[in-house]
Structures are given as C-alpha cells and as structure tokens.
View 1 (tube, rainbow, N blue to C red):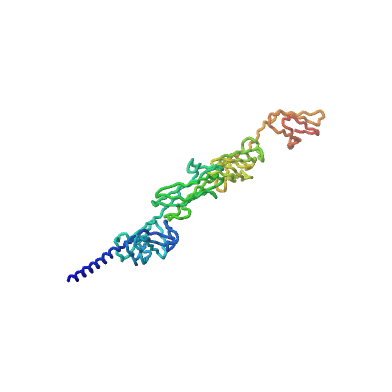
View 2: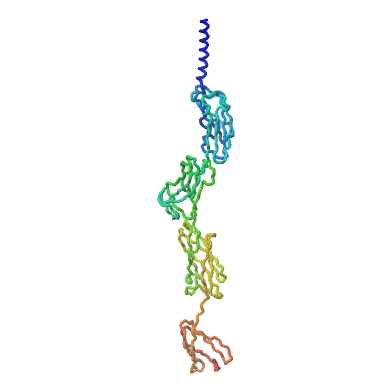
Length: 445
C-alpha cells in the first residue's frame, strides 16, 4: 500500500507540473496603430493627409507581448465604422514581436472633414489573452483648411514699411499671409509667391487655428504696366482640405483708370488760326492739350485715347493721341496734337461737350466754351469834301478818319442822281484822301 501511494503522488505532481507549465505560456496581442499607404504589402509612401477621391491601402501594426505565439487569428480594419477588410494572421511571434495586417484592396477616400480609421485584433476573441482591452486602435484623419489671406509689398524682408503704391524701378519684397482654420497641425506646407516670372517658394509647418507670413528674401524690381502678385498655399495640393478653392489670393496693381484732369486751348501756333484773344470762336481752328490723371496704384508708361463731341458746330480733325509715363496718382499731357474747329455758322455762344475715351475703357467728359466771332465796329469817316482840279477831269476827295483800326476805305461813285454806286478804289489804312482822275464832263456824285 505504501508503494502505491508514492506512485500516485508522483503522478499527481507530474500532472500539476504540466498545468502550471501551460499557464506560464501566455499571449497578449496589442493593436499599435492604423495608417494608410499608397501601395499594399508595405509599399509606396505613408499618407498623413489623405485626399478625397484618392485610393489608399489600410494597415494595422500590432505586437505580441506574451511568451507564446498566437496562431490563426483575424484582424479587421474599418473606416467610419464600416469594414474595409478582414486579414488572416497565421502567427504573431511572442516576446514583443510585431506583425502587420494589410488590406489587399484599396479604399477610395471620402470627402468631408473627419474620418476614423480603426482596427480590431483577434476578431471573435478566439485567442485567450492576458489583456483583452488592448486589441483595438483608431486614428482620426482631420482634414484641414488652409486659407490664403493676402499678398503685399514691403521695403524689407519681413520688415520695413508696407507699400501700397509702388514706383517703377524701385525694389520691394513680396509677402504672403496665410492661415490654418482647423485645429490640426500641418507640417511641410508648400507655398509660393510670384510676380510675372519672378518670385519665390518654400515649405513650412503651421499650427492649428493660427496664421503665418511667408516672404521672399530677395527683392524684385517693380515693373511698369499692369501686374499682379499671386500667393498660393499648398501649391502642390499635398494637404487634404475641406476647401481647396481658398488656397490662392492675388493683388492687382493696375494703371488707371485714366481720367480727364484739365485742358488748354491754343488759338495760334502750329495749325491753329485763331485771333489770339483767348476765346475759341466761330471759324477758328485750335489745338487742344488734354491732361489726364492716373487714378490707379500702378504707373503706366504708355496709354492712348480719343476725343469725340456731341456738339454739331464742332468738327474734330485730329481725335487721337498718346500719353506716356503717367505715374500712379500723377498726371500727364498728350504727346502730340488734338485739333478741332468751330463752324463759321455758329449762331450763338454755347458750351461744346467733349468725351475722352482712354484705353477703350475709361470715359470722362469735359467742356470748352465757344463763341460767335466778334464783329469789329468802326467809326465812320466824316467831313467828306470834293474839290475839282484845274484840268476839270479829276476830283480830289478828302475826309476825316475817325477810326484807328480800319483796313482801308472803299471809294464808290455814280453817274446822275439815279445811277448805281460802283466801287472804284480802296485806299490804304489811315489814308483819308483819294483823287479820281480821267473824268468826262458829266454829273457825278
């Protein structure tokens, strides 16, 4: 009996040893992270900001901290609660070894703001583990909204004064303000500032709900004519955003509008034929000088314009000209000649209206007074005397000159009381006498 008892105790100890050994080989599967790549089987590149409509492959990384391997279990990856794929894992080695579950088919990334990629290890809990609470993991992809605010000029790189009216030929530095309207921190955001074929670009990170300024370290020489500064954030469209339409901003620096400012009329000189009295009168041709003002923020090295009129008594014979080197806010006269005439049949004084059209788009009007030509009022001569000369064939006429601005005197005569007056001579100015010769013995008056 004693012998049998020993055998029984030994056997019991052996069974107990086997059970204890089994409990020592423990398994603990841990879901570490879920993420996206551009290719399956760990290929392609890691995606931190997925773009709507693009195709990506979902992954889950896990590890086994237990002392025993876990065999034949499943990993499920979901997007926004909907299953994406179910992956069979043949074995997860022990002692902290990692394993990767990868979906073999891509998912098309949806639009919107926030999307949750999640993963579950050991679907159905077929593996006995020491901790069942670390089998899930998730990651929220929050799409950002990067907003281009404004572009502008300064006299130094991130320093100096802001310039609103640049001067042609001067050097300035391009600046660009932009912001992140979401709480997500975004790294390596590409930006660019350009002016025609010049500018600069770079990349920088930005915190959530904050703004920043980018600028060019080298100056640009300001050109003439119409130009625009363009600022672009996320220039390569690398960042998934709720709105890609607000990633750029432009500022136009335009010459103009060019408007009428003043005018001057020249009656004499050139092709003008006025009398120099300072008035534009009927029958006169005059030259017109028009001064325009540049109301824009950019100088203009060349502009053209035309004039027209709605006044029927005015005829424009030269209606177009050019204006050069008009600084922003400055003025300039036309380079050559604008010419108009006033019809000689002008019935009364009036105001002629002219329309100035610059660059086929900017219209302004101005007026010029026009007058009926003054008629010169002369004082008539007096004290006319006729003296018969000794040969009885000539008569000397004398009179008193009462004017000092006449061109001359017309001499007329007639035969008999019923005859018609006939002009026979014109004397010079300031000549108050005339002798009519070769007369026959008739009666003249």
